[in-house]
Length: 251
Ligand SMILES: NC(=O)c1ccc[n+]([C@@H]2O[C@H](COP(=O)([O-])OP(=O)(O)OC[C@H]3O[C@@H](n4cnc5c(N)ncnc54)[C@H](OP(=O)(O)O)[C@@H]3O)[C@@H](O)[C@H]2O)c1
Image 1 (cartoon, rainbow, N blue to C red):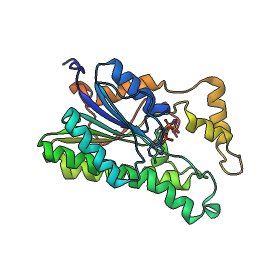
Image 2: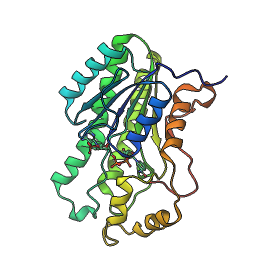
Image 3: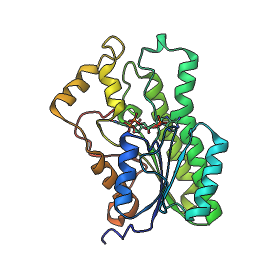
C-alpha cells in the first residue's frame, strides 16, 4: 500500500528553531501538513493559517499543557507528535559535572520529553483516537560515550520511557517510537567539534565526519519519520528505531 496523502495532516515538532526540528518543519510544510511548532527562540516558520508557531520551554509543564489545548482548539487531533527539543552539554567527565548542570540537562532531555509525551497522550485520550509519537533519541542511548554522562543517561531514559508509554497506550491506538536520527550536521555537531579532546575523547571521529561530509541529510530524516508514521508498509516492528544506521554508532 502506498503512503497516503499527507495534505492536512497535523504534526507537532518541538525544538523547531534550528537543526533537525527546523528541517522537519520545513519539509512537513512542503507536504501540505498543518503544523504546531515550538522552541525557546522563534520557530523557523512564522505563524500562518497552517502553522501555529510559539515560543515555549519544554521544561514548563503548565505552558506545554496550555499549548496543547491551543493546538487542539485550532487543528483538532495531532496525527504525529515529535518531541525533538534537546541539548548536549555538559560535555565533561562525570567527576567534573555539577549537580545543577546534570539536573538542568535531564530537565530538558528527559523531564521535557516526559511532559511532552504526557501532553500528547492526554490529548489523544480526550480525542478518543490514536496517533504517532516520536521521541528523538540518539546512539548515546545505547553507547556509553565518555564525556557525555548526562546526554547518555537522558537518552537511554527517553528510550525506556517511550517503551513504557507504548505499552500503556497501545490498546488506545498510540504508536510510540524512540528514533535515533543518525549524525546530522547541526549546531549540536558544531558543539561536539568545539569540545576538548580531554573532555570528549571521541571528538576526532566527529571532526573527520565533517571533513568527509558523512552526515544524514535532515530532509532524509524527515521523510523517514513520515514513512514510519504514515506508510503502513514501513511500520517498525519495535519501539526503538535507528535511521540509516551505517555501522558506526550515531551520536
Ligand atoms: N544532530 C545530530 O547528529 C543528532 C544525533 C542524534 C540525536 N540528535 C537529537 O536530535 C534532536 C535535535 O538536535 P539538533 O542536532 O537539531 O540540535 P540543535 O541544532 O542544537 O537544536 C536543538 C533544538 O532544541 C531546542 N531546544 C533546546 N532546549 C529547549 C527547551 N528547553 N525548550 C524548547 N526547545 C528547546 C532548540 O531551540 P531553542 O534554543 O530556540 O530553544 C533547538 O531548536 C535532539 O534531541 C538531539 O539530541 C541529534
